[in-house]
Structures are given as structure tokens and as C-alpha cells.
Length: 393
Ligand code: ADP
Image (cartoon, rainbow, N blue to C red; front, side):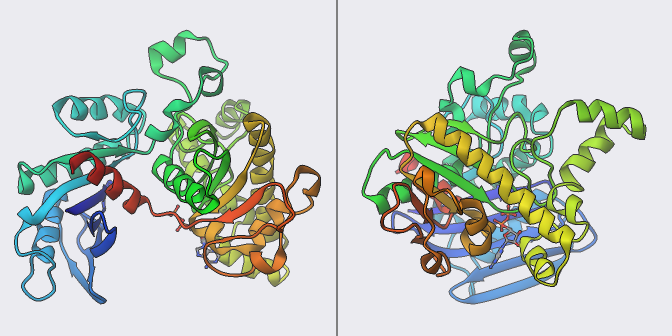
């Protein structure tokens, strides 16, 4: 079955076509700057990449162009769009309604709409992708895969905030967690590598956004992101955890609106805010190597926050089989992995420097270590394709 995976953002559409169950990628690409004067279109199939600059007014036009590229007589991979057997959509917020991926029907659409106030930038954009796809593919089944779904197994004592309980009921204020498709995918891959189904694993997704999950017997029992993706780790431009009183204090001191402060915490903080150089870990490592102290401090803070979460999740899990690193930083940055995991021999964590410095997927703990340290590449699109295929086959 050919599965089309769509990740629709407010001004972009990322897409991939998989042949399932083989999991091979037939074509992929993205459209950026939808609605602007000039949009960028990228399409790759069989080692051929096409890049176009053209005006794309809205998501519907974007989807039409994607189908045109997929069925192009020269570079296309389909004769007819009806060869697509199913479509998997990435949906950011599924609230408490969705514990896993589901076929999209009118009730599901209504729920995604309902949770738009918890994810105002993402859910409406995801819905635009669903509607644009429906126009061209009428009866093809579509599946919604939720970033929040995998974390719905968290127990009440982990997902509630210690605010008046009624706010949970009235305003849906609770920890939801994000990056669920990634945590689930790398966890399943790690269990296969370890030869241990239902292992207890701490999965560290460290990309431009970052989150950690504690997974016990296959179920997420805690995760670092909360009501929104702002909580938890220090990220490229996001502050992560901080004293909530800072918000009201700064609003008084700086005379800024909620939106302005929200922008500061989401877009001007984190690695960028501390270093005042970049949100990109590669740049910061280069700057640190040149002696830049702010860059070094930002990296140190980033690693220290991850260490604290690993420590607390080891206690939450009671017994940890493995600590896993994924995402752009987790997969590619041995230096950061070393800073996060060094000097923890007392806790059964022992880094093997040689293995840590090899590229690609690996186990980089010493053979003698009680807890395995692993690198597993994430693939959120494939994770969505697998769920979509399993539901639609
Ligand atoms: P996103 O959350 O946008 O998907 P990614 O998972 O692509 O982000 O991660 C982006 C981060 O990964 C950046 O900080 C970047 O510096 C880092 N990164 C990517 N490739 C490498 C690499 N080869 N070496 C070190 N860091 C890398």
C-alpha cells in the first residue's frame, strides 16, 4: 500500500510517500512560505530533486501541486492519485480524546477543532491539511496521528499540576506531552535492538525542540513537556522550566503583554537567549571551541537540565534498562551526549568514549555498564506511515 504522510504547518506542508509494509520512501518534499509572495517547493524522488519558486496562495493549492508533482509524467511516482491507499496526518494536540492514531471522521475533526485553543498555531494548520487532502482524495481513508497520544498513559499524579483541581476540569490544564510519535518510534526500535520487549527506557529527543519521556513496560509514565511544548528542557529558543512567578514579575517590570512575553519565552530564550549567538548547537560548539564563554554556558545549562531529568526519571522508573538519545542533537553530537552522561558510574551509567564518537546508531555504554546508553535515529514520518498502514490495511 502507498501511504502519503502529511505534516501541515501554518505556512508549510511536509510530505512523504511510503511503500508499506516495506517502509521504503518513494518520494518526499516540502512547501514553505504558503500565502507569501513567493513559496518554495521541494520534491525528491529516486535521487532526483526539483526546487521551484512560485506563489502558492493556500494549503489547497499546495496539496494540488503536490499531487501534480507525484503524478508528473517525468519525475512522478504515481500514474493516478488514487494509487494512494491511505493518508496519515500529523496532528499536534489530541487532548485527552486520543490515546493513539485513529481514522479521521467528522467526530475526530470536531475534537481536533475543540483542542485548537490548546494549540492555536498547530491544530488549525493540521486541519487545513486534512481539508485540502479531502478535496483531491475524497474517499481515501485518512488517519490522524497525535503528538500527544503516546503520553496519554501517564498516571494522574504525573500529569496534574498542583493548581486548584477544578482548573483541570474547567480549562483542561494538565500535562499532555509532545513528540509522542518520536518517543514511541525510538522506544520500539530500542526494544528490538535490546531484544527486550517492554523494556524500561528514558528517551531523550534532543532537536531544536526537545523532550524526555520515561517509558515503563511500553507505557509513557512521565514526560517533560506539559500543557504546551514550552515546559521542560532548554531548547533552541524555548526556556523550558522556570519559576512561574518570573512571568508575572517580568510582565510588571517590562510592561509587556502576555503575547509579548510568550514570544520571548518561546522564540528568544533557550540556547539563543543565553548565548546571544544562535539556537543551533553546531554553531554553539564551534563558538565554544573558539573560547566563547556564553556559548559554553548555554551548552552546559542545556546538558545539566537533561541530566536532572534523567536523574528524576530513573527514580520514576525504579529500574532503567536504557537511556536513549535521538533528534538532531541527540543523534549527531557526541560531545553533548558525553557531558550529559559522564561521571555517573555510581548509578550504572558508563560512557565508552570510542563508541560514543562513532557515527550512526549505536550502543555507546561500556559493556560492564548496568544501563545501556543508546543512539537511535528518529523517523516521525515513518512512525505515522506505520500507524496509518496498520489501521488501514
Ligand atoms: P527539529 O526539532 O527542528 O526537528 P532537529 O532534530 O533537526 O530539529 O535538530 C536540530 C539541532 O540538531 C540543531 O541544534 C543542530 O545544531 C543539531 N544538529 C544537527 N545535525 C548535527 C550534527 N551533525 N552535529 C551536531 N549537531 C547537529
